[in-house]
Image (tube, rainbow, N blue to C red; front, side, top):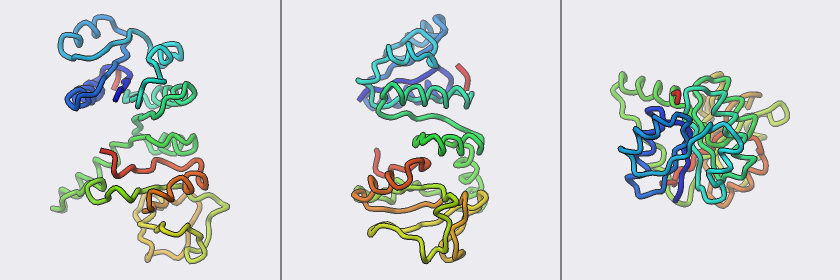
Length: 227
């Protein structure tokens, strides 16, 4: 597999090292020639000199031969622009870093499925640690025939929970309302802006994607800051 990463901040370089350790081909896009020279002595990967937010540079990185593009910069606006450009250039998958809730919502509206929000995930993990609980990765509990998918309820789909129509083989796990966890038994109604988390058979995933075209990140449970 081949992966392209934008920039060379600490997170990006760490990700590149892990991908290289797995035996994957890695290309780093970096605008600073001295930084490229420095890293070329440490990493056995390809380098492309240029601005990773430039359509010409992104196209030069060979989207047709790339399995995923990572944009893990500290600037969320740049990450979002890169993701949109990469999608227009037919990159198969674009993984971008966001921190603020407002950018999570923007990514949801733009249909950027692989937006990662580490601040929220880390905050939950830290709270669990304080409680003496061990966080359990969802990917370790969901196997090959299942996926987890989420979507945002709009005004048209807001309805009593018992009237909410889901395909066979799909169940609601929980939902988030105003960033608060709500279990299905704790509410009888889906409200606009609720984020609903579903568990589904893999065969139903295309149908869910068609129904909620601008769904937020679906968590593929069986898939193994500044420059």
